[in-house]
Amino acid sequence: MTKRYTYFPGCSILGTGRACEESTRAVFAELGVELDDLEDWNCCGATAYMSVDEHKALALAARNLALADTKECPELTTPCSGCYLVLNKTQRYMEEYPRVGDKVKCALKDAGLNYTGRVRVRHMLDILVHDVGLDEVRKHVKRPLKNAKIAPYYGCQTVRPYLDFDHQHYPMTIDRLAEALGATPVHFPLKTRCCGGSQMGTLPNVAQRLCYAILREARRQGANLILSVCPLCHFNLDSYQPDIRRRFGEDVSITTMYYTQLVGLAFGMDPETLGLHRNMTWDGSWLEREVLAGATA
Amino acid sequence: MDTTTRHIKYQADCDPTFAPAIKAIPGCEKLDSCIQCGTCSGICPLSIYMDMPPRRIMNLVRYGFKREVMNSNTVWLCSACYACTVECPRQIKVTDVMYALKQMAIKERLYPKRFPMVVLANQFYKMVRHRGRMNEIHLVTRLYLLTNWFKLLEMARLGIELIRRGRFSVKPDNIERRAELHAILDYEKRYPPTEAAPK
Image (cartoon, rainbow over all chains, first blue to last red; front, side, top):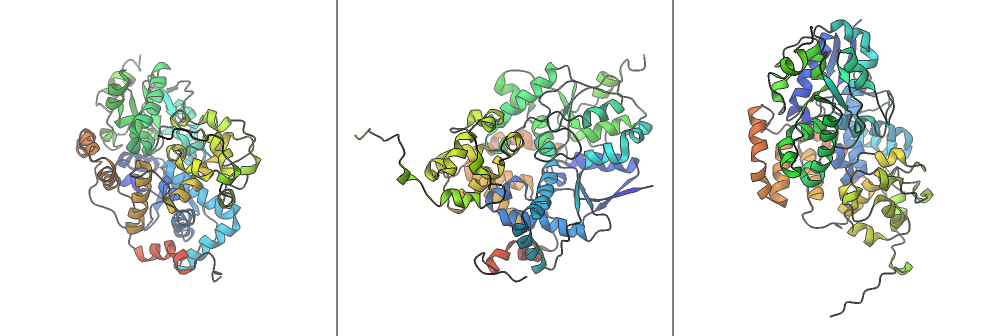
């Protein structure tokens, strides 16, 4: 039975987070999950829109919900944690605060759109681990990643303020997924600690301090890889390692990738297909050197 | 030179409209139930950079100390990680209170000039209103041109790396039905909140 979901890519996916989409599409296609693109989607508004105007922020995100409402599958999924939270929050606030919800619905109706409220926002990680299932994932593993020691980084907005599919304080979804791929997850207390998000652009000293703590802790726990979920978390942890080293005088370099990229590697896919060459911390010999070496012995 | 300043605040210094305006925003209604336990300040990863921790902001807001709250950098450091919202033993959505304060500050222009977080929010808002989607490269360029264009030079290393890896999208992305989006966003302009909106 093929599973089908309505797919919302998000703005980052078109730019710096390109690898996130490439790996997501490759892995879900392999698992026989159909992603039906939401036509003419718009930006969810992220944290910036909510800082300017509450009604407009909800209405902006709700346009996507109204577009998804016309689709055959009412389950809307997105690979970005920021988009996931904003769409999820909009959907919930419209239900929780009818006064706000009615106004947003009026604004949509005025523009010729209709939102019935049947849309459910799902995280791709949730779909991969709970709908597809780890048994199915295990069946596709061609290259068990025995020597990969993983620090699973969930970030803020995957788990807060809503988390329907895991424990909010110490989530284990990525840990269990990594085990299914043959890898070893390490104990990682900072797995849901904030990376600073967009503060990396506005107050780099602040955000780099937060990322420094996360990177250092991952290394201290003996990990050789950080898995991230969200394009912004990944960007912050992946791209600023040279700056962090300069600022704090400590080498915190560690390979980082999206969880979907690791799944793809375990499925035996080509690194290029998974967009691994787009990661700043990726070097072609990593897989051979750190993960596959001695794994067969 | 007059160096004598009063440190004690009088009730007359408060703005009686401040707390009700914030509490009317969805998510901020439970503000009065705050027990000042300090859990929000303890869990906040950014409180070490704030001039007033979230706990103090909560108290100042509910008693109407608008000037003090608006002069602090706290709301602009909040990255919306929702740790405080999840941990609050009184179920106060602290992140939503921070958002409400940001909205009020931007509407009333009560923020430090060229403060990067405000510029970022405003530029993001304008870009998405115009095109329907956000382009990271354009956004960051505008941010630095308006705040500190020296940063653009510092970003050269990252820019080159992004180009080399095919992650640098120069072309801004537009949605097709921009008129529809504008109709949604301009709803309040057509039907101001005071007038009864048509059902």
